[in-house]
Image 1 (cartoon, helix red, strand yellow):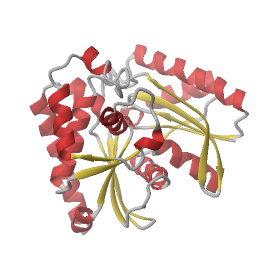
Image 2 (tube, helix red, strand yellow):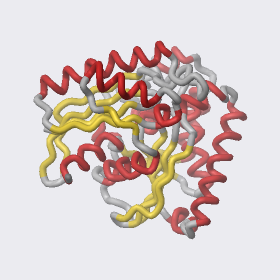
Image 3 (cartoon, one colour):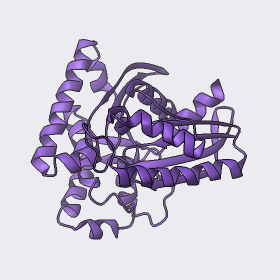
Length: 302
């Protein structure tokens, strides 16, 4: 029995699963929004209350893994722990207090694992895909051709950091545009800008799946309905138009909206909308799978 744990800037997630013939069979899924990046400062690090919320969720996860008889487990920390001056100290505390072997992975490894998980659920698998993994503190862009990863880069552009540091819509737009300028320069330097513009844009992580759930007005979340769903630019524009006038509480009362994402959904939509516009694509393909599934598959292939 395998388990993967993702300690993200916004959400802590667990997947317990078996793998048969490269197919993941989930046994238990757990997720809890702890907003580890809430109140984060590059100078002072993690906010104490955010760290405690996250530790509490990880204690629950450790119990679930023991109860399920997990034999192999990998726990990874991402953007906010990479940036925090006390990130390593927090990871050590997690290991000491919960027994979970939390490691902080770099952006390239996060991108590689996410791509592995995403490709496992796409049908059909595009020949060329530009994967966009939007997190709370960073966004990973991965360009694949066939099973080969041609480009994988992590940028400090996340929905939590945008909300807290750049609350106004025009400020968020400027930040997003700056990162996409950087992305295009990186792709051009590697000679991949034309190839990226030919690919299918695939989105993953909570922001993207929440957009899918809102489109489907899902009362009960179903990953099978979300996987491979298409969201068009015009649908994103309609979502923004509907959500912007609402309060956070009103947004979170909508079918498909996860509690804790009421303020984060707007910058997330703006990121996706800007990516589609910059790459001249009309629609995004949604994947519910990502980092957790990639970690499970990497454990199976060891």
